[in-house]
Length: 281
Image 1 (tube, one colour):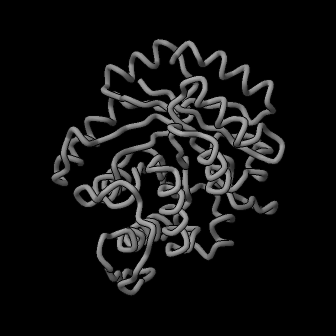
Image 2 (image 1 turned 135 degrees about the vertical axis):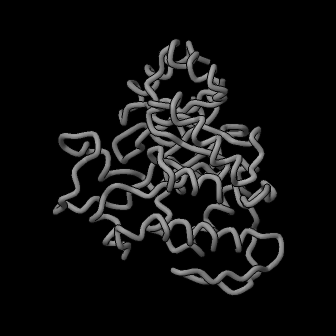
């Protein structure tokens, strides 16, 4: 099983270059980074985990800039977002960022897609909360048009693009309905989420990995009903606090990659946690 990591990298934590070099030297599979552009101080949205919102949420580094640094100092380390808030981006700009990072890293990028939890953050980006999932879906379709091998126009409910010359292209070739880099959709199990996964993604990025025994058969059914290859579905539990038993259970479910959580801390604490996680490699 491949073991990748995720961490809230901030202006106060270990630096991306130092962490990426350590991960590759130690044999970890990848580095996934979250995204928050800003956290409005005046907000009513509760923190999903309960209690006060941790400090790191308002200090998070831009994931694409940080992953670009990580790509430049590694050769095989996977690079991913966990997750990109697609609805909060201009899709033409985002398509260029993603394709450039994937191209420069030699196809090592995984696009984790999500829909967010912070209503006020989304609102500052002009996102109506009730529209965020369909807006994300629409922007994914627009980006697929820009990533297509031939100039392809797109006219959607929320945006459009003319048939265009748009290079570089992501390294991975289109597969079925999916174009672009490896794409995983995050979120809680449910019919809408599973429909999105089957429509435009390579698989699911479930936070914490709980309930997979019950939800995986449902996702596999939706995937098969959409005409997708059963062997192609990828499920990657995300932000996991690992144990030998938990990883063995994932392996029994056919899971091949797990993303474990690192603390948003300085170099000594993070490297100490990598030492501890080394037993699972």
